[in-house]
Length: 387
Length: 211
Image (tube, rainbow over all chains, first blue to last red; front, side, top):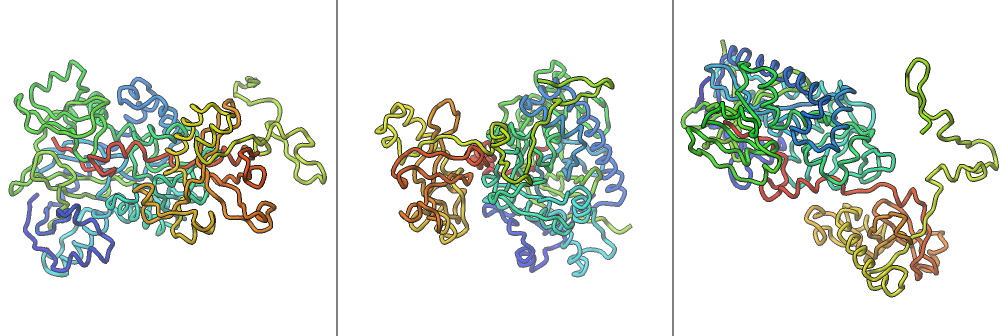
């Protein structure tokens, strides 16, 4: 695994614009950066990332099966009691999931370590599936990459296959905050995939969703929604005014309610308890568990619910390296053993490993100057070196 | 309830039909079979419509204090309960000329859209009805409707219920079908995320914290 200077395509901004990638620069700061790229060997991809990602996802499903049926676990994850039925029912019914992103600490030496699972509302999907793919094709043609270079990225076609497999004949609606460009862009991309899979689709701004007397969700025009893709976290939806309707509604969701047990930092101590010593897991404990002391005075402290690295603190040898601030943490914290993100040219690299359906499907690289990967981290493309 | 155990142990529901509907027998309306009481879509209820809390207090059906608090509830619901239209002509087509405004005046989330002005609010005639106060909007007169002759189109709610108050719209009292009043509600998703918006712009962006 190397960080390689590749040079930019001179016209990439125009290419981005014409492909709908309008959030390549966010709040005036660059987000997409193709001045360099990460190079992997095929073995690093298959044995270091893809294989372990499949194992980790399978372990997560095994945990979801326990959690959905065990109210003590749901309570431990700070999931409100009003949501338990929805979680249980969706799990028992086998409601399918669409996608998720495992965040891994991996630098090509030693096993990948799971930092967390963005199992509910991951973004960076379009840039992975489309723009990164386009970058590879054009960079091969432009001679900026060696002939025969490849990419671990079947995200786009797997999404279409997945929609084809799980969508019903009724309306498949997509919702997010319409005014957040990155979120809007992500659901517009997913809607595009769904249309290609033959689905009948619509976009609805979050406040435009309605609740009909029969309990189904509907569009502003009153049309019932058979399946709702929501780029809006379950822990927020459960607390909204419509939250208590989720357990009874005939509308199905992507991601399904049972994903709430995975997109929760409480997953980390629960996985460690299921498989202590698993090579791809870091030791982790709920903060109020006396065994948290086994981590000594070096650990990451993460709120059960948080986004974009907010409220994450890092402590090494008793010294606070990063004191995370933000609006999260009211529901409690977990402590996780420290895994240093690999450093390349002074940058910290994070592997985002995509799961589509229940299978690993591709990766994205995020790069940050600091120790915690937040929403200011750069998206950097990757390729597989020819064998 | 009348749930019972079958011999084989499987659970059955009530032993009698939940609903009986006849749609082909001429002259036998649902009410004639006594089904009116079973079918909520046939029920009506009494409501009151006022322009504001002062109009409510002046009629003295409700205590002034309740008029104020109920008006406040309806007022607060207005930004999410109001229907949203892509253009001013679309909005005025439903609600009549001069009854619409740019959505950005009401809420940032409705910028680039048009909303009807809040014409007043509606409450149940009795508190026991348990009907949440809600904003009402002017409705454009429908051709052929009796009230249209007087240039009055009545009111509508965000859920699409039509309300015609007595005396060509001058009185406060109206009877409205329960099903339409307690129909579709909007704006029930998105509030919790807004409370985190100072940190994340309400975005669900999932980038992670690395250890």
